[in-house]
Image 1: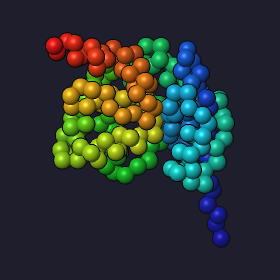
Image 2 (image 1 turned 90 degrees about the vertical axis):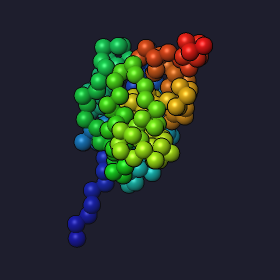
Image 3 (image 1 turned 135 degrees about the horizontal axis):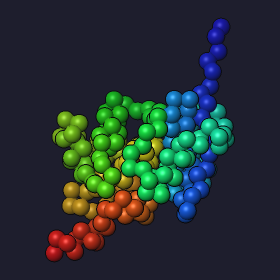
Image 4 (image 1 turned 45 degrees about the horizontal axis):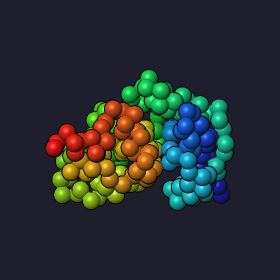
Length: 182
């Protein structure tokens, strides 16, 4: 009888100029980017839910290419990611996550925009749920999705992290957008 090998998930803690977040990858690519300043449990709970039976193995060297790209993004030297991703989801979720990757740095889209882009205009709430399930924050830029009225909306990493990322990319805060419209 053949025994199935448990999936191995390698992880590291990225610490860079105020950023502290866990990263995880499989042999296929980056599979998890944690929320700012969250404990190890965020990663371990995600792994137990999304990759049951996986072994979590700290491997800073294996994760270095991912760390390097994220640091380049944080330092303003990178506007698109070229690292391989290993995101697992339903076909709908994958379509939403792909649409998110097409939002250029410094721009935002609404949930309705994403629903239209994937040709499911009535699925705005489902788009929101798929965005909320995005396992690779920053690399799949769900922080670039805002409410139809221009307001910041929910974010797995927290609203402060979302606002910091958008500000880093040159997107004005909601208060600044409101002032410009007045």
